[in-house]
Amino acid sequence: MTQSMKDKVVLVTGAGRGVGRGIALEMAKAGAAVVVNDLGASLQGAQEAGLSPAEEVVKEIEAMGGRAVANGNSVAEWDGAHEMVQAAIDNFGRIDAVVNNAGILRDVLFHKMTEADFDAVIGVHLKGSFNVSRAAAPFFKEQASGSYVHMTSTSGLIGNMGQVNYAAAKLGIAAMSKMIAIDMQRFNVRSNAIAPFAWTRMLDSIPDETPEQKKRVEGLKKLVAERVAPLVVALCSEAGSKVNGQIFGARNNEIYLFSQPRPIRSAHTAEGWTPESICETVFPAFEHDFYPLHKSGDVFTWDPI
Image (cartoon, rainbow, N blue to C red; front, side, top):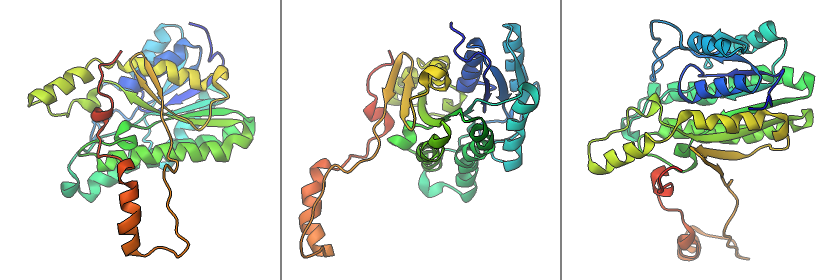
């Protein structure tokens, strides 16, 4: 593997397990020094006891001859986000890339979802991605370089049942990534989003009682978390410096470029519209182009490659 991230410093949030761990290890293999951030919490956000997952990943990186430091701050806290960015500066002298990967789940059908369910997921995914990105922004601006990679999801881009909170956060992250790209391009800073397909502990709660559910879960178990990492490294490397404001998907050996919303039909009238004329004219004209209520699994129907 080439040292495409040699002398670079990368902060990876939620890097103690799963996709984040794979990214941290791949960054180290590419030559980067890594701040391995992980709260060491359960999927619901509760603190877990025992050895820190972040410290375990640091040991793996050091064992391969790399440089890394563990950080246990919460992305959901403004001060914590600034402290993890400062950890990069204090330990390695700079910061070149931020990978916003930390996340929790509180899946529940919308009519049963509590305010706490919604706020907790928004707080970690959307607000957390903002907190960490904002903390790194002054350093990126001053050095006139930097790369953000944010984890979105097909739950937000397409849809999934029981994930109003998660989908709202993930679609918000895709939009935020684009806005960061627009605001920061003048400073030679880029921002992209990835929808990762991977079997991790975040998917353990998916029901597998019916034959259809069992088939879906078996398919998901084929998705290797570590295969998301090469795309992340590529986007943060100098060779990826012209890629900005895009939304990608990574699914084993497949890489996707997602579309972004644009008008696909239009209707106009010289007289102006009334509610009645819209129902009589516009809706019937548009209905063949209406999007069905697809879920992610309805779109990605083939086995991972």
